[in-house]
Image 1: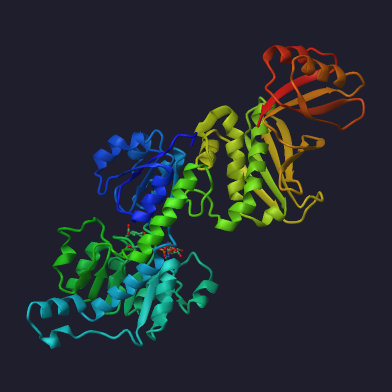
Image 2: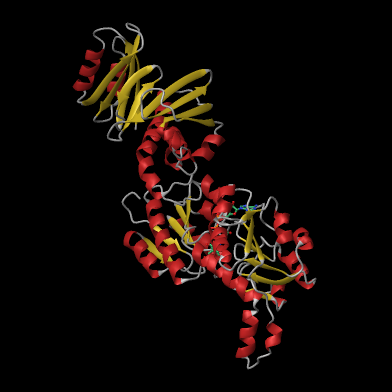
Amino acid sequence: MNGARPKILVGDKIVDEALEMLRAEADVDVRIGIGQPELEEIIENYDALIVRSIPLVTEEVIRRGKRLKVVGRAGNGVDNIDVAAATRHGVVVVNTPDSNSFSAGEHTIALMLASARNLPQAHQTVKDGGWGRSRFMGNELYGKTVGIVGLGRIGSFVATRLKAFNMRVIAYDPYIPLERFKRFGAERMETLNDLVRQSDFITVHTPKTEETIGMIGMEQFRIAKKGVRVVNCARGGIIDEEALAWALKEGIVASAALDVFTKEPCTGNPLLEFDNVVVTPHIGATTFEAQHRVGTDLANYVLSALKGEIVPNTVNLPCLLGEEIDTMRPFLELAEYLGRLYYQLEKVPAERVELIYNGEIARKETGILTLAFLKGLLSPVMGDQVNLVNASWLAENRGIKVCERRDEVSKTGHVSLISVIFTGAGRRVEYAGTLAWDQSPRIVRVNGYQLDVVPTPYMLFVEHIDRPGVIGPFASALGEADINIAMMQVARTVKGEVALMILSVDSPVDESTLRRVRQLKGIINVKVVFM
Ligand SMILES: NC(=O)C1=CN([C@@H]2O[C@H](COP(=O)(O)OP(=O)(O)OC[C@H]3O[C@@H](n4cnc5c(N)ncnc54)[C@H](O)[C@@H]3O)[C@@H](O)[C@H]2O)C=CC1
Ligand SMILES: O=C(O)CCC(=O)C(=O)O
């Protein structure tokens, strides 16, 4: 954050405690319900933006947010955020998917019961002075079959609660292992239509994606049991609204309970005309408990992300849990160092990069290390526009093919070793690094040379003839220029041929000293490396 207090725009209601946490470290402007044009106009002044399901964080907002580093979603669904655009612009997107699942799950069950027992209609009748009990004949959940589409956080929460109602729980989620179905007492359905055919109740709990938009549509209502009851507490449009209206008219659907709509607020939505449609204004997560968790968790994530730290629940980075972040931190540093070496030592564009994770590190989430490596690789040529979020996209854009290989068996005796092989313009270059006993990064191989070098801010990589009288004059020339050598290592592959000397110096080496040392006898080349 370069010492200055960051500026954060909060575009929707979050709890006061979260605002206080943000204000302790940043200047915060709260604009609840900010409109799209105003957001686009003022976003250039902010380092972070916090939203709920509105406003829309479009590519235009991200493009105009010249200093925007973080978009925080106080909640789970990020369908109002153009995550791909954020990734291209290096903007971190964080959310709090675990913080409101209980509330959304409980609201799903409340909706299911409310619509099965006509609660809102009965309530209104009594309030209006009426009674008329026979109009409110409903259905029990007991003994019925519920079809859960999407067995993630909320779907699984709903599954276990509905088991307690003595329901048969069937679920469709092609992206999770059978073991998860068993854990939550759900029968796995091979196809969505198998689930639809058997369900007395259908509840959807998927994210809104190309694949899930309209996934409960005409085809499904045509094969559904007559009298099926449907619930959508996930995202508007997963149950196709037009098809639902048709199925309600046809009497196929006995009732629908909806917390979410294709367009929100849902004023004028034809589904509101149906007496047997129970609606709430997207309040699945609107509980004191969920909002407290969502707000305070998000405040922590946004502040950490602004400091450049890796936080859990970064939508556009590989997922790391809290404790994994600590284990991975020194490896992230190492991977970035290995990347930084390449364009400072070589003037050949890398066309292909292969990262080999060997030993214990091969068991970890190495995707994030590859991103750190790419950030290091591109930073010397692209500056600070590169970060973990956009590094992969930028590398791909520059035509660099990146592959990863993992081998849990250590081949070199190192507990963990990261090796990188670069190929480009017919050349092959290889570096490797590890962590020392104190978890500090070490570069242990540069092409064929075996070393044990601590990366430091100013380094010189010097190839020279392996014979007496070469190193001494080099060190003296630096001394005469008042440049202190903090560390020096020499490695060779064949006696009397070429050797590599690596020096850490305490201050940058000026151009005239560089010219001088490059001309010394026996020196082949001198490359400056900034870590
Ligand atoms: N109404 C509200 O206020 C709230 C709504 N939500 C919404 O609830 C939904 C579920 O949230 P979580 O359970 O936390 O998400 P999650 O990511 O934990 O679970 C989603 C599940 O859907 C599955 N899935 C994805 N595509 C699928 C497909 N084509 N067919 C079947 N399954 C598929 C995934 O494999 C995953 O297991 C999201 O849309 C989220 O935005 C979440 C919180 C509050
Ligand atoms: O309370 C909100 O902002 C909406 C919650 C929600 O839909 C989500 O977290 O996905």
